[in-house]
Image 1 (cartoon, rainbow, N blue to C red):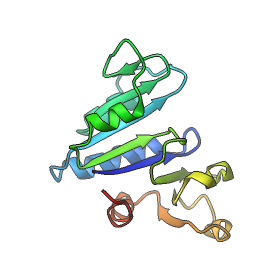
Image 2: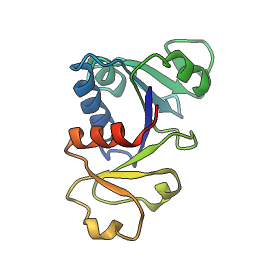
Image 3: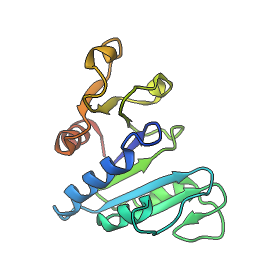
Length: 161
């Protein structure tokens, strides 16, 4: 399984990117699992247009990991380690958030790059709203946020199973 996490500020495009990657992979008959971190337990589950519904509709199996519950609807919070074990037979595992989790990580950035993510990331997926020159001081791979095929190629090349 290739596991990668996505980090970025709110409304940077993390959900849209993960959804696009999942759609690409599931049309290739790949098994995709997505874990979304909901640290404040405020996710609206399976409502049209919300993250959990979009992820599920992309063909992925989805877990929403909160502080007091995990949806796959358990009456307690589950550990990320438990969820990773549940998904270990999948081809890809995408994690949104959980920056303390030791996984290769792509920062999704739009309009600005938040340097707080530097200790956790290996690549940045950004659009033209951020000048590439502004990231030259950092040893990061720059990926085109609007090119999910390029991002998937980077994942396939750089993420060990």
